[in-house]
Image (cartoon, rainbow, N blue to C red; front, side, top):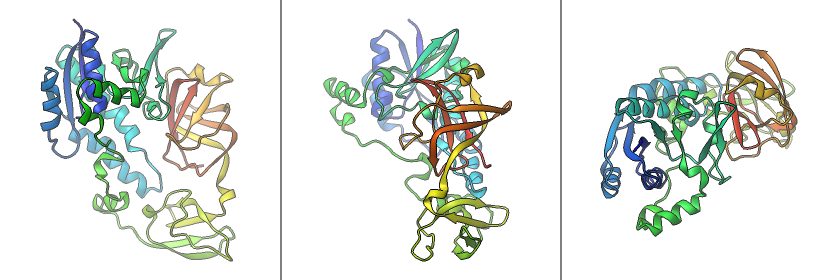
Length: 344
């Protein structure tokens, strides 16, 4: 019987993952990751006891703070729009689960992500899950080959509705009806601006809001309070509505423009990580710059600038691409890799 380590959060997705794998004949070991505040293990222990699997706690608070939280704070202070969930999934959660798997002699690592794993030409890729509303591949580019070859993600073959139905039929109706946790975990439903200010000694000073003609339209309340495409808090001029076009951290200035000026035909992508560079030169590569939001339709053209930077030419203009956002590359439902949108 092969042993598998399953990341357990106490929610329906990880629980059903554990049950499915146990039904498939695996020896399941549950692991809860200690990433931020001290975990209350009551519920997850109860669930593991019900299906008779052991549960272990893996400490990861220092790694999480240095890898996710501190870059999150620093990014906003630099005028970027980070994606902490992308960083956490790639660089923290899977890494810690791999460590536990090695410690307990488990061949496989499993999570409740709605994605699938494919082996193509000897390389391992993440595939989109079959539920388009729950597909989480966008956040998982950059997971190493070493981890992917050991990864099991059974929920990629199910819709969320099917997972809830399965849990209900097996006597876990209350768990199936439990509201999902949403948003960035360490913010705990607080505004990110307040969190950043509480976690930095940097002084957030007011400055100028400058219009498209160079005219000063007003004063901003500190750069971290603004993101690209934001309309709230931006003054208009002669009835024309403006949006944040650029955050100039060097001069402490917010540059604004009409909505049409925020469209772009190309994106600079930095810190690129892909399974195989050759995949990017195919004629049918698409991108996602938002998890479930509006993304450019059609195939992109890619120019390599250096080892870790690309220029991506879009088939149609994209609106309000914010530096710091993840950019994921796909061929069909295969995730090729990704990177971070840079400042031009």
